[in-house]
Length: 171
Length: 120
Image 1: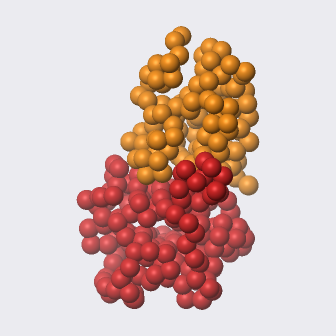
Image 2 (image 1 turned 60 degrees about the horizontal axis):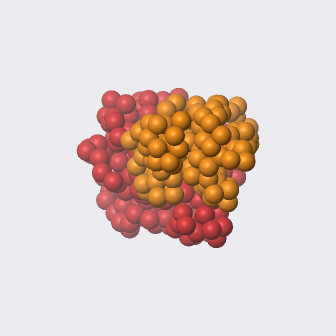
């Protein structure tokens, strides 16, 4: 999908939270759409999503803040490809990048709606080294620790993760 | 599957230590490459293994998972794993995941060898 250019859209959201299974923040604020696009659900395309988001926000953020956004976006896109769309290339992952009042807001949507995903155990390195947890399973943990806000919505069909990072940065 | 964009060169420093130079992207797709490199780097007397991230371009959660798997293998062999060349961002990720507690982080290969008590 081509870049649409900047236009104003309204975020309609419910319930202010920052965890998996929760909806968007409670504010109904206006955000400027920087770009939106879709990619096929193919392994490795999380890198493509990351690169396109970087291109879109390079004028707004940089340095360590940009690095944190890159990691969060690629992890969210990888979850959407692998778990949401189960790697079915014909089902796209949709991405919106918005200018959000002093920061950047990225929404990544897959077709993994339905019953809410439950959060797995918080990754624990000692447990992983002892064979008590899968060595993988760091994705959501990384996202949460890289961004200022994370919101998840699920309408039964579409599953969207929204991440927010402020340009002044934090962790 | 996407084409792999990683290479791992193994350097034997001496009988006790080896280094793996990781260039490109470290993701779950690199499992075979990393484990092959580990096998090449490991001998009967190897007790220190240095992962050189100077030319790392990208690492995701799958890559972190691979490092955990590598740590398990190294721990079983009583080998000490060190990392050099991590940029600030990946050092932060090592701290978040506590990989920095299981793996020594050094600024240089010499420091990593000294930390492992190995003289060259």
